[in-house]
Image 1 (tube, rainbow, N blue to C red):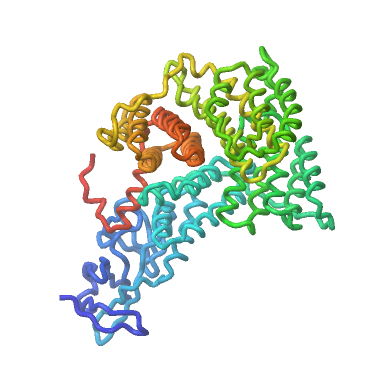
Image 2: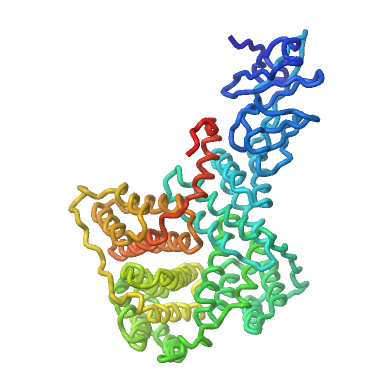
Length: 587
């Protein structure tokens, strides 16, 4: 029976280990207290108490070796300071230590950890995991912070780390972190820490070995006019002048331009040329503003300038041969853009209930670009809001994934991705800060969809549900297809069945599960988030279902993977629950 007595200073019940004479010179003593397994060592007359589970992989530290005050775990050679539990090897994390006292020759331990502020502890481990690019430490930090409801501080730390420690600017890791933060509400509860973990892993990876960024100060100026800052920023981006552009953007935020005015400035520069950097420029700019939404406008001056290197160095697709021959797409875009002025003046975006998304998308998919671009202009003349026109173009881009035939080369999926995520970024940007300049991005997206027409030859049909009502629709069957290579059509069929059964939310959460268990790449995270958010815009309309079917096909095409990231997260989660990983038989 464990003997307890009231602890000092209200710290709870202390636990009797036994007479110190029995511990000196002998094996360490392992005791259970308050749901913990604690190992007690007596070395040179000093008593130490640590959690018996190695924080790295859970091996019992009572089987370790002590020399010169260093406790070494025998499984992966992690070394710890016996007196405090701190690790010498960052991959291993610190071991929890406990207060010890000796009274009347008896050893007592307090089972309350010496570091009671768990949020501070996990934020510190988060910092270490990001700095050292340690996946297991990041997984443990996410699990601990998620359990404490500290998602906000986690995102803030990661966002600032990712921008301050990469001189090349915005990274795919920051985009992945943002996509996961955006989609947390639609994921299954158990997948939400996995999503944050994936984002952190990619932020750490994208900053590893990179030089840090050094900020420029804002201008000391009395200028406050948004149109002046807008003109400055666009001029400097036109000439690829990064430092002047950075000072302009930082000054705009510092002097009080609103989030909408600042976004308008950045989005205009991101659409001053056609489909910049195959769509990445506008997409990353939009993601930067979305990340600021999560962490607060007070961090805008720190985060937003990270996109400047990408805007300044972006390829301008009007210079690409594929956009000029055999069809002069930049010329057609310029004609449509000129006609859009009169159309918008006449239409005035007055038709808030416009629902011509599907026929307009069909034209963008199949017609000559002269016809489809004219269709966009005429829809604007009929009063279609810009945000709905951008949604129609994004829907058309999503349909390329629905109709993509596996006879195409595997790498062609990336072409689908670039156009869809660009069109979705234009849609989200238009909701945030609609402008006449940003409307050009809608035309650019439609032209990009036209260029991708070869991906639907032959054209895979939209799947027809194989079941009626709820019978036969199975999320388990859908997830099983992700265990087999290239089962894109089978997955599409299961997705159609779930949609027909009215289980859209379950399908979305299931696709999230499928994504997060893979060693997914940048494009898969982007496709999932874009599809979920665009489908949400369409609600129960067929367009929303088509978008999700396209995402299901894309994600399945990139599965299965080794799933190493999931293994690391699962290890961390099992350690958090106290499971004994080391006792499993080797495979």
